[in-house]
Length: 263
Ligand SMILES: [Zn+2]
Image (tube, rainbow, N blue to C red; front, side, top):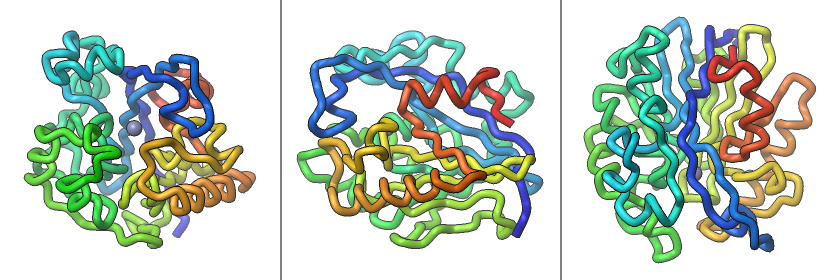
């Protein structure tokens, strides 16, 4: 159980902006631009993507794919941040990606799903069902185009409360972190040096969510969300583990000192 991945990339990310109150309950008044991350993991058994970011058709002209959302969220998506282009720049194509883990089905994580129709997908239990019949609360976060792309992927569902060791060697573990949506997932990765990185996805949006055990307004369950935040805080207490809050602009800078290649 002591396997490691070979490489980890955090691709150059488009950004969206919103009032900070959208990222943490009880705050507000400041506009915050956050990265929309996508991660690529190279393991001895193949390539795995964690999340798929925004629709490549939005690159260079976000309104083309997202209409009024582009302006509402001030989406910044330069052409060179396309996922397929970035994969090619490190010697891969979208067809080389054999597995994809989707943290949840909100539009800022699913825009590239149509690039990977042949990949084995992993998704949290109940996420697909909820995305088709959401509450009014977060209905605007699900995009029909992406749900159609999701319907063409062969999914394995990760049950609530179960963490899944993808390769059976301890190198990549899918973490059950429900609360933001019904099936939100994170990912724990063991790097070649033996240390771990935990990718939170939207189980936390900012570092302060974890510090204060406080979620955000669109969370479907506050108790579940808070349990997830406690889980992340425990993981961060390990000496060999870095918890990376994926949408947090400060974490993004801190964890990408040399740009997109992390390990
Ligand atoms: Zn998000």
